[in-house]
Length: 96
Image (cartoon, rainbow, N blue to C red; front, side, top):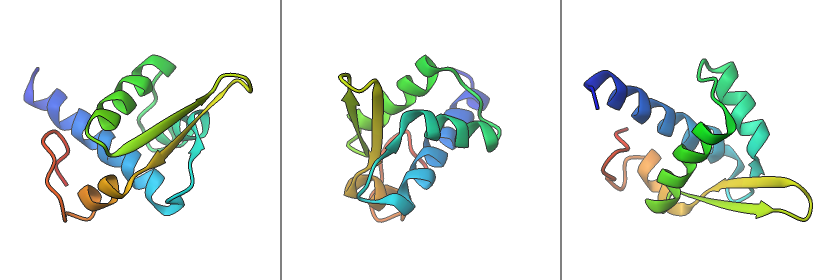
């Protein structure tokens, strides 16, 4: 991966955490998150955002709840994600 791609991925991960942080501990709808990211210049499809969320979930920074019976997905920042965002915890791949 090129340095420019690594920087872009890091920036998007941070944007996701920044969007979710004000709602803590409540989740927001996946599609709303995707629209906000698009408004901030990071348009992506469902699969691309899912990849970023999978990464952040593995790091313990977000939690994803699929409500398959209702046809939507909820996303929330965790306390670990807040600590990373606030610079209290270092996490490889998420540079504040």
